[in-house]
Length: 182
Length: 271
Image 1 (cartoon, chains in turn yellow, orange):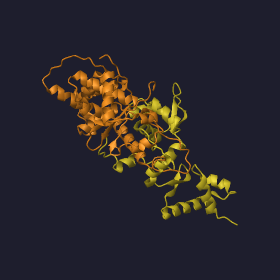
Image 2: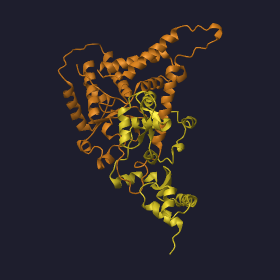
Image 3: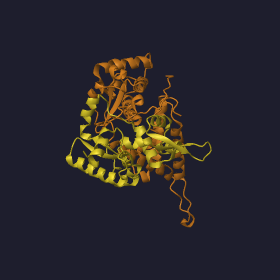
């Protein structure tokens, strides 16, 4: 019995709890070329999208993963008996600075946010949303921060390049802020 | 009152400036520096009157603002219009713009389909990301202060007759508020000041509320459209399960329309 490459990949994706990269899939399929894997993945993405099922094949953090549709969140949360993941404003703003300005020093983050970020950085490090990417060649060799793969996974980003640029956001009119607090 | 509250807030001087700029609907590129400086200093005075320890950044900004203000007063001596003096206000406009951009970026991040909030993958580790659970106090200090100022001014409008007979202390006030909220679960912010007769009592209530928020017994929400501030009592059962809270969380009143603003406390040795 022969199994199609598409079925194999679909099965791998079905059981995986992390996004699978084309390279990883290629590794476990006796070296089917990455191009072929990628092409098959593209087909699968399109098929699931078209089927309009409860879940879609999402391209995230450089890999592929089945994810439920956002409209189902309230039911899923009840099933899991869980409060939705919440990320505080302070964490979000600090993450935003790091995502856009990395590698970035703590002092630079504080300059932009205008407040001490020591505690927030600690929490973000613990949650593996940011990491120390190096040290700057300055007195005291201060640490440089960057975002992690988990950051991409949590925010559903294929890669850092997928973040809209700050300038794009301006032109998308998100700057006009009715109901914003500050 | 010799009580000193140390509060680490996630909002800094730039947030306060933005708050003032929005409030007075002024052009960020043409900030009326005298007005904004005066207002800014008033806020600092107000905050300090509660003995809340201000982060040094607030004072630094106050100095910067005052400096800009005085520079603006000096005549610009332009010889042959040669060296164009830079607008001294740029010293704050640029950081403000950068700050706003990041706020927008943070909001854009929040609007994304977030894993374990909006979308779910197969067998996630189910580990909660719950980044804020331990430190959510939920409220914009500046909006709180605005409300509080209104309340204070109401009292001060009345013929001034402050009889200082302060027998109450903050602990008493805290337990009074808890009793009230246990009964009502939720109350309008202003309503909690209704019995206060003097400035001292008002401040006591305000500090009691801050303390309650800090220890997580209450949450303070603001409705985005009406801007009404509501104080919500956190049930003990919710407290006990803080973080892992299960059904309670789902039964919580729907505050989707309320903007939850966190007064973020970064732990005591955040530095």
